[in-house]
Image (cartoon, rainbow, N blue to C red; front, side, top):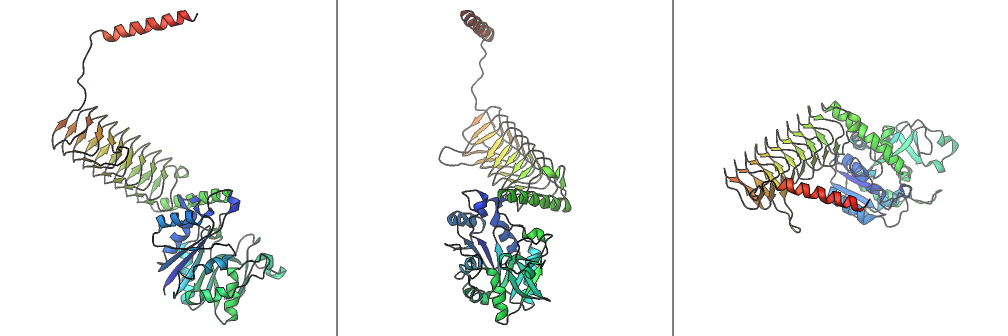
Length: 452
């Protein structure tokens, strides 16, 4: 059965006290709405629609970076959840199968829950709703069940006392027959306490038309929505706790788990070792057996098996470290390939470069990759030895087995096996250091005498 995904992300989020649309606040290094898209990706949807409203252009740009194939639908006026879903009509024209409806500010929905909704749809139900039983039902909408059949969903503010006594509550996520979705949505009115078009009314309308509806139970933790900065902070703590637990379960050593911070898509192989105070931004893969030492920051990079990074190293987007690479302390790598067994030692910057197998870059090596307008690449051959404090002015190539003398400024290519020395010849001035120091001390003493 074909599947389609609608993610509602049009709300203003005024309680966030922010000029940024709520769904653009980050959780696990990515915008909130990205979590709903990631959960829905497990369904392999044919069409994906993000409904935007407040700050729509900002959300549109962020979505294009995450998923260039997603369709954006705009809800110019926020009139309720059913009205938001209706904006996806054009994007899902002629669609059949199942339309899943998720929320951009509810990041903890699990793919397994969506699979259970899909199974209920496959069993013949036209509308499937997620439900949960909270410790405190509070002001959640209630699910009115008749055995396995879902009769209707009633919002708390519209519920009778008997309905408020129901403990089974609306989890928000829905799976609806895509061919009937918009016909059902069109029948929803706004005769309620809030004067809004509630998507939850779709159940009662479907039942009145002889269609089948049911509910699938989800964990309460999956229903956590983000409406305030405090809730966002708590959600981040929950996300990190889950990510750390998953890493440990998968065979990763976290020396001090509470100090390691993951992004939504961080991938770490078994037997990797992550030391304290490491931060993973989006887009990081660390292969098995690698070691990330303390106080490193990684983003948009790949670390090969057996590699060692840090401490105090930064890997920026485009850093590709092959197997058994050594990256020393206070090293920054950006948009560069470091091939098998190569070493980039402490206090170095390597940007827009290729470093060959088993090459060695001494302390303080810098690839000077930017001329103020354009970026240029540096190529360093296999087994090359780059002396400490070498400046490599790109575009430039250092050949295999070549060397540079310490303090050299390399401005032209170095052939294979050659030694490049590009620094001024040293000249010693006999006794000049002592005479200069004596003179400076005398000047200092004279000035102190003048001020007393």
